[in-house]
Image (cartoon, rainbow, N blue to C red; front, side, top):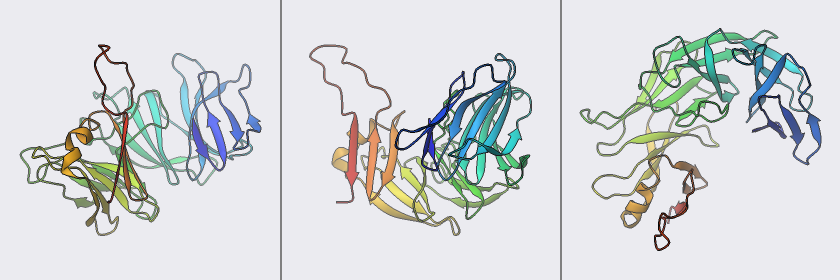
Amino acid sequence: MAAGGATIAAGSSDGGAAWSVDGTPLWKPEEDAECRDVGYGGGARLVAVRHCGDVSSPAVDVQSVGPKTRKATSTYELPAGIEYLHVVSTDPLVLTVEDEKKRSTGVTDLVAVDDSAARGTRRGAIEVGDATYTLDCQPSVVESCTELAVSKERDAVFLGTEQNVDAATMNEIVALDLATGREVGRTPGSTDANQRVLGMDEKGAVLAYQETTLGGAGGAVWRVDPRTHAKTRVLRAGAAGRDTEASFEAGGQVRYARGHLYLGQKLISAPDEPTEKNGPLAVVIGTT
């Protein structure tokens, strides 16, 4: 599911459907259609990911669509061999793909698309496989990628590098030009904690979460200037809650908004024993 242009759209293997925010139906799957909307990307605009033809080995394309009519304004056709595709930004249009021809697991490439014409074209591509970056995407979910940020102002993507315990800092945030793939900036991290990209704030700066340290300090949230790549700390969690905060870092969800850090579990399970207690399902940390 995705939300874009006051439209809520849901895709499936049988096609996609959409509703306005008041619940009015806008479109629904067509029987015996050659192409099916398997998912959508939302945000500033709405795009549809389609599978066409044979269900077992479909042709894949991405359409920029009108959020009220589903009328396509641009179609970008993916080359053969793309197993999974994810939408990470709709303005500019940026995708991540899993190319089965490459000897890598998970996301292999990040692709920037020019959808200004009826036939979309590739502006640039960046190889992100082989555990170079901490990018995380769920294979079959179109809008699921985390730990990256796309800046329209800078026409760049910001990614955290993998941890390197032998380097001066655990990892860094790298800015890569979407058109050329070249590095255009780098932000050092901490000497004793990993950092991950959270996304963009309302002013166009990159947000990053610095995890708790082995020494017992709480985590922190940093704002990275997309032009200078300098960072400013906007929140520091207290040491008293360090263990609880750290319990969310492996596989948990992390968000920052309006001066608060939100940490949440992705999965919920019952205790193994009746007398056992699980930890919290979510934690909110404020600047005070």
